[in-house]
Length: 119
Image 1 (cartoon, rainbow, N blue to C red):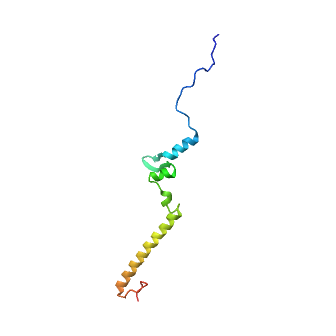
Image 2: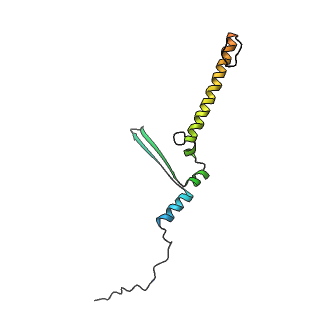
Image 3: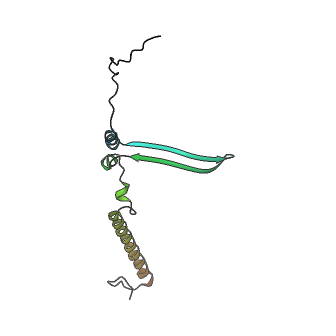
């Protein structure tokens, strides 16, 4: 019969230090991570479905450094962007209305009044 030595006199091998979840999350948010993938379903060389997935996980500051700020410019997500889009649309419509009124005045030969309507 053999004897087995169960004493643990040898220290564990030193490797990379373990990081807890908070450290990993902080590192991911600081540096950012990109996950990309495509799903494509073909049937007899006919493309039925293609789904392209792009996921960028980062903090807001890191995303801004990467040039990503859609949450500030998308009117569906930002009330500030929605007001700006409405203001731009209103300006374009006013310019178009003035151009149409000017064309109408020139065609009729009527002098233009202050309101822009022909007399």
